[in-house]
Image (cartoon, rainbow over all chains, first blue to last red; front, side):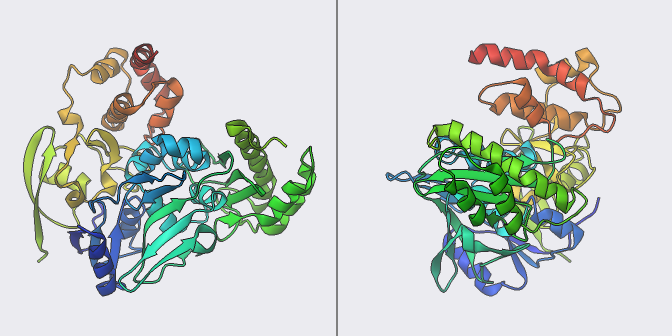
Length: 286
Length: 158
C-alpha cells in the first residue's frame, strides 16, 4: 500500500483555530475537509504538507442555514450528500443539487464537501456552474480580515482562486433565487468521471444566467451566451446561442474529448439545462 | 520517529484504542493494524470502491480518509456484517460474484444505499453503486441479486 509522508494532524475546534493555523502554516500546512482530493494529491506527492488541520469537527461548520429572506448559507464542512438531499437546496437552487449529485460516486459525495471542492478550483468542478448562475458569494476569512468574494471573481485559473495564503472559505451564501435552475453534465460514463462539459442555467429577474464547466481555464459565467439568449422575444435562436458560446469558451483537447467535441456539446447541455430550468418552476416561459 | 496519535474508533460495534502516526489511512489501519482484511486495497484514489466501509452508516472510501479523522466515530467493515444479513444472503443466493475482490465493497455500498435512500429505486441503486467497479464486469448479477431488496423498500415507502 502506498503510504503518505509524515505530517502532524490536529483537529480545529473553532473558526479561530483555523485562522491561527493558516497564519503559522501558510507555506507548510493544509486544511483537511472531505479529503477526497487532498489524500489523492498527498499520495501522489503533488502536495506534501507537514501539518494538516482537520476542519470537520468545528461546531457549526457542517450546517446549512436558511434565512428568512430565502437565502442559504452552506458551511465549509457540509457534505455533498447533505446538499443533494437538502429540501431547501433542491427547491431553491436545484442546479447545485444536480451538480453535487454528479460529483464522483456515493462514497465521494458522503465524504467530499462543497467548499473543499470549490477551493480546489477545478475548471471541471460540477458544483461551480451552479454557484455562478446563483451568484453565490464566498465568505472568506483569515486572521487579519474577513471579506466576501463573488463566485464570479473567485476562480482565477486551474487550481487557482482569489484566496490568499492565510485565507479560507468558512461558508458560501446563495442569495434568494428568482427562478428555476438546473445543471446538465456530459461525462464519459454515468459513474466516477469528471465532466467533458457541464452547463448550469438559472432564471433571474433580469433574464437568464449561464455557467459552464470544462470549457475554459476556470468555471465560466457565459455572459455573451446570456445576452444571445435574452435577445429573442419568443422562440430562442439557438443558432445565435451556439455562435455566442463558441466565442467565449476556450476548451482544451484532452483524454476525455476534443476541443471540437466540447464546443459541439456545450450548447446541447445549455439547451437541456434551459429546458429543465423552465420545467423546474415554469418561471422561464416568456 | 514519528509521533503517535492516541484515539478511539468504534469498529464493528467495539471501541478500539488506536495508537498510530497521523499518516495512517483508515484503510491501512483496518487491514494492517486491526487485521480486518475484508476491506480491499486497489486504486487508492477513490475511484474503484474496493475499500468501501460504512462511517456512521454511510459508505465511504477508506483509502481517502485519515484514520485519525475517524476518531470518535463508528466504522463498519464487511467483518461486522452478520452472515444472516439480508444483503449477504441475497448475494449468496444468487451467486452474485465472480472473483470476489469487489464484493465486500459492493455489499457495503448496497447496505449504505438501502439504509439511507429516502426512496429505493433501481436507478438510485445504480447511482449508489457507481463508485464500485467490478473488473469481472459482473454487475448484472449484483443488481438482480439485490432487486428484491429494492422492491421491498419501494413497497414500504409506497
